Image (cartoon, rainbow, N blue to C red):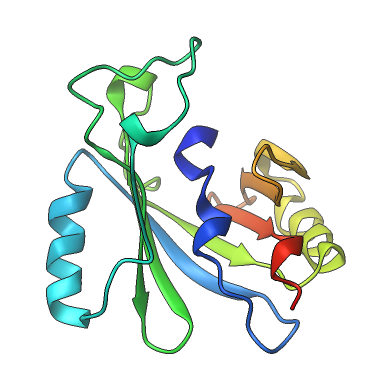
Amino acid sequence: MAIHHELLQKTYRKTLTDMATINPYLNFNGNTEEAFDFYKSVFGGEYTMLIRFKDMPANSESPISESDADKIMHIALPVGNGNLLMATDFLESMGHKMTEGNRYSVSISAGSLAEAEKLYLGLSKDGQVELPLAESSWGSYFAMFKDKFGIQWMVDFDPKYLG
């Protein structure tokens, strides 16, 4: 699942404040591109990122099938002032199963590592951690988890956007 969100921080644009920004992150069953073409027709603007699974480095533990190669790994559309609507395609071939309750995540882009740690520790308390907050292969600090109420969260801090 982490590969779905590996480039999340690439869509993050540092705001003038040190406060976290919160953006919805949606999951689709193979029709992300269709959904986002629709959202783009409503909201306007241009994608700040569109990455297909075939664009990702090969992973021998989770190879991407030919039928999944053109599906969306990560897409971001600016909506309003500083907000992003983001999404991915769930791949059943990688063991992902769409169920009610996992159609979305709340993504938080923290303004500092201390804020990311505070948010991660607070929100994940008594929850279920999928990826603990740690430095990622792409250079940001990233975590994925469900809180104790079953809400899925992603916390990200990218030191490259400090100004």
